[in-house]
Image 1 (cartoon, rainbow, N blue to C red):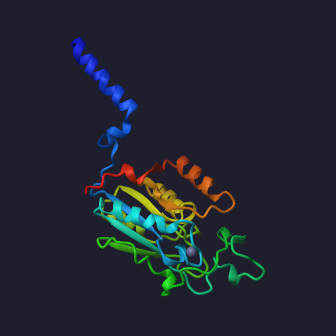
Image 2 (cartoon, rainbow, N blue to C red):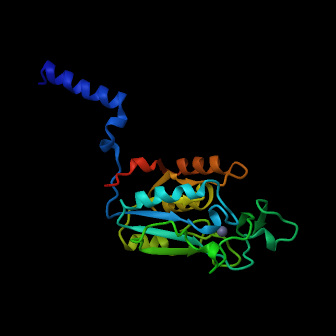
Length: 240
Ligand SMILES: [Zn+2]
C-alpha cells in the first residue's frame, strides 16, 4: 500500500510531467540503435539555393541533418541521378512548362526543370554535408523513361532500387527520413519504406518541401494514413 506521502509524490511527478514536458526531454527522446538507419534524401546542389530546382530554405536542412546523423551508426544517402533528356524534364515535352503534369505509361508525372544530370556539379551532394560515416549512396532516377522520387521503388511502382534488400540484409528495422523535398522524394521514400515493412519516422525540421498544387499537405496526410511517424530533430537523442 502507498502511504499519503508516496501518493502525493507520485501525483507531483505526474503534474510536473504534464505541465513541463520540456523539463524532461530524456523521457521522450528516441535513441537510434543498430537496427535504425538515417536516410538522407537528395541533399544535392540542384535542390539548394542557386540550383535549377532549388527548394525554398533547402540549405537549412544541412546543419540539422549533420547534427542528427551523429546519433546513427547507419546512414544511407540518396542522389537523384538523371540521364540528359530525362522523361521528368519539361524541356523534352514540347509545349510543356515546369510544374505542369503529363500522363506517362506509369501514371501522372510532374514535369521539372532539368536537374541532377549524371556527373554534373548540380547532381553532386552538398559539400556542406558532414557525414563521413555514411555507408551507402544510392542513386535513383537513372532510367531515362521512368522517374524515381522514392529511394525504394521507381515511379512505375515495381522496379526496385535494391535499398529494401540492402537494409534488410543489414538487419535494419527502423528508418528515419530527412532531406529534400518533403512532398516528393522524402514522402515517397517514407511511404515505400512502410510498404516494405519498416517502422518509419520523418524528421520534419530536417526536411523542406516544394509545395506545388497542395502537394505538401497531401504528402503529410498520406504519410499519417500509412503510419509514418512525424517527429522533430529535437526528439532524437544526440550525445554531445
Ligand atoms: Zn528528379
